[in-house]
Each structure stands twice: as structure tokens, then as C-alpha cells.
Length: 207
Image (cartoon, rainbow, N blue to C red; front, side):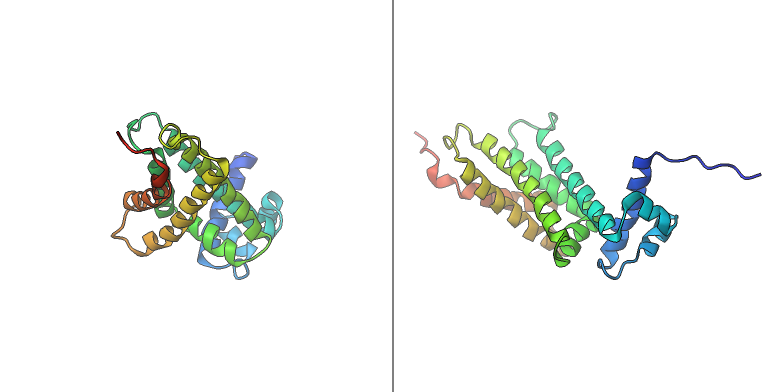
């Protein structure tokens, strides 16, 4: 007599399917990866994949959204961690979490910044929207870090600095993956130093 398998909650099943899809898309681009390949990797059928995630476009979009959410959460958690030393630069903590995520989740990074951007719309637009969320997180963090030392920081200036930080981090991420001798903390130090260098000229002279 067959044992009836326990039905997994929908959310759990969706996450398992996205796991399989992220892995598949990291190995091949959007056009070469088939839904059947994703189904096999997940140990299920094509109809099941379509049932939970919709079309192939929907599958890829779900991958981009989830992995970006994970990246944003990793940065947010590191910045707000009460166990970190209070004298450590929160921006550096956030950047270190960013680079740590890239190292620990190479497949995610490949899907987010290599596969999605290369496919054009609608995936490029999805990536840009999610990337703006990271920039907004950085802008809020920069505004908080600069209170008292640099005077009131204009929101536009905070956004520009955040874009400098995020764009630099993007470029350094590929370098980090290609150079195993580098590490997330060193890369975070470079990005933080470059970001703060734009503000030093306006810092009041020490008496």
C-alpha cells in the first residue's frame, strides 16, 4: 500500500521551485533554460511549476524578486544588528553584508545582475526597481550616519551618494568573485572610503 505524501504548504513549495529555478538560470540564460529542466531539478512536473509560478516569464520574475528581497534583508539585518560595536561604521557593515551575500550566493548574484540585465525588458526593469530599493536603504543609512558631523544632508545629495556606493559595490562584486584573495570586509572598506570621501570637504574643521 502506498504511503500518501504530505502536501506541503503553498509558500514552502513555491520556495523550493524558485530554488531550483535560480540554480537553473544561473547555469544558462533565460532562453536556453526550459521549464522542464526546472521541473526536473525540483523533482516535480512542468504542470506543477506552471501551477505555482505561472509562465516562464513569471518564474524568472519570481527568482529576481525573491533574491533581491534576500539581499535587501541581509543588508538591513547587518546594519541594525544590536550586537555590533557601536563605533563601527554602519555603512561599512551594510556593504560587508552586501559582499558577503554575493560570495555566499553566487547563483543569486548571477541571476540578479548578469542574467536579468542581459535579457532587457521586462526583467531589466524589475531589477532596476529592486535595485532602487537598495539605493533607498543606503540613502537612509547615509543620512543617519552624517547627522551631526556634516550638518543637514540634502535628500538629493544622500541619494547621489547612495548611488555612488551601490554602483561601486556592483562593480566590485564581480571583481570579488574573480579574485578569491579579496574578502568582503576589504571591499566594504573601499566602497565606504570612496563614499565618505565625497563629504570630507564640507566637514567642519576640528578646533
